[in-house]
Image (cartoon, rainbow, N blue to C red; front, top):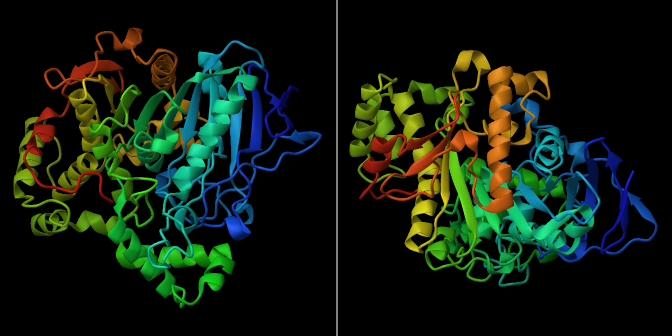
Length: 511
């Protein structure tokens, strides 16, 4: 087993044969006590050799009792939660000076759940196939990572609501300073993530503190269109403190001293009351000055290679977990969509016509799933590509169309379907096999997806033999890598639906 001397001390990992794994390496000090709701600081150095051979604590979060089709992926239990959660994991094919491309994974979970320490994100397969170094990270979640208390406490608790993002930056700084000791190239760092992880990737592209710490980005099912404005973040904080029965003026010490479970419970209550994804990056004017997409339009992501996309049927996963949604009729559909779309009738009709042309389901629930998929996930990917194009910078676009076999295929190509193929963990368990699928076609897709991700990490271009003809995204061809059976390149897939949004006022990427 290899020993690596990091800037904080020596770590000894696991020899897995074709790769070595180092688990649970601290990249920041425990954000506890006076460091709660503060930006992360460097970890204390240690003496001797630290064992890096097991997953460590996860950020405090709600326990997922039933995650439906994704239940296999959530191994969070309250006994594993710990405010001392700022660790990362590294998989490397060799402890040498070969300067391999580095891929840093930022997990999803709605900014309130998840962990980089889960078998679904095991980097062994990806690292071995591409002779690359893979890193997964933890960051603070929910109220501990994305709650702006600065406004309502007059700065006495100076949390900006972006502490979780600052954790991600701290992890990237650790990678920049240490990854060469693991055989990685600090000048070829790709950040990638799905859902809230993809939204994190998109936000880091706009974050001045992250500039220069990564060079390529793969936002998966989330991009640059998700962040709370400051006034909304302040309202959420006020509701949070009120739920705890405390005063933002008088109970600062009490807030700082609350046990983490109380914070999780209050976050759950506010989420149930307000609705949507209440914890997310905050446009606080200091850490994050603009909506990330607006920052990209001003040049924040100039020079960063981008490969961005979504799955075709993202929202089917969420309706499968909310059976009441299937009771929609046309009137209720229009009413629900009007919350985020001005005059939704035109969008509904455009989607109905497009789906009729392809002889697809046009029931209210099918239209709802298709519209929300595009509003929240696919359009932000396209808008990011278009914003980069306006800067004179090319990017690459993808669409995942592989269909989950779960319960007879009812999910289509849903949210999170890409993850198992990126990491090669689609068949790690009975549950993952039921969600992602197995067999020769699935194996071929794993190879094609990993090859594209690895090619992009190495060169900034995801083109492979299977993606011959893929060119940077433009508004003429809108060339898109399609990951399904087979893998191919298509021009402007689902173009009728995309075009229907032109000139429509809507909250794109809003949850």
